Image (cartoon, rainbow, N blue to C red; front, side, top):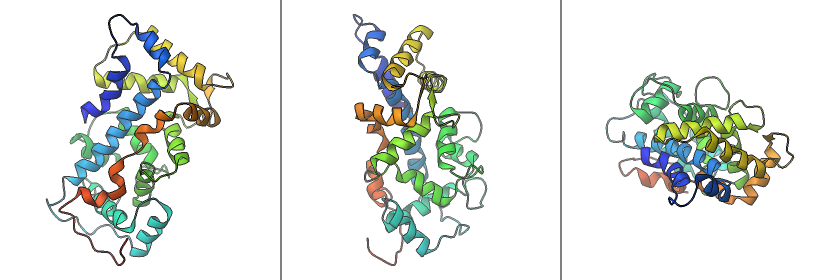
Amino acid sequence: MDSSRSSLVLSLIETDSSRSCLKVWSQMICRPVCAVVGPFMGFIEALILSIAQCFGHGRPRNCFYYSFDDVVRLASTTPFTVNEIEALRELYKKLSSLMIDDGLIHKEELQLAIFTTPGGKNLFLDRVFDLFDEKKDGVIEFEEFVRALSVFHPRAPVEDKTDFAFRLYDLRQTGYIEKEEVRQMVVAILSESGIQMSNENLEAMIDKTFVDADTDLDGKISKEDWKAFVVRHPTLLKNMTLNYLKDITAMFPSFIYNTEVDD
């Protein structure tokens, strides 16, 4: 997982000795934004794969109930099929019983699944949890879990991916992306990757990004600014798709499920 979280940052600063970092960044406006989405997606992948490895190591306790009608309803309002929702339900059961067997995912359980240890602070972990916890009640319910993952489905609407990526940066949930928020995210990536960057180069990179994205020149990026920015730089959403979500059941050869209908 470490390599997936740092690959985009490494590519961001990888240059020939004859070229300055600032010149490369000037040519690649959207790299700071792409660099943040990359590690975030690494966390999502690590979460799913870590729980998938639990299959075959014991049957999940029957502490979580979701009716078949609920499964069908979720399938009708997300890109997932009924079978895929059922596979996600089994994943959720595993994750929600790692520490507290109450049918809800707590932040400590999310951290334990990804890092195998329940302690410590991590900005990307916080962002994953906050974006999944739509009700902001400190836990992730099954429907929140499914709807958040559905954004990364190959068949998810571009508009949903654009909105989710915007909220990833909107750390303070003000409805705008500000320079300090981008700075905080990029600094976190550099720190986790062990990469050194001068404050001057960091500020130049962020300033160049805002010159292109902040179309109304008010010092922050609104949702409309962001949508226009994504249209000009479609690669921003390249990492907002996890292809295996279109058939998540194929990831778990030991997973046996029953359904009342065929997809």
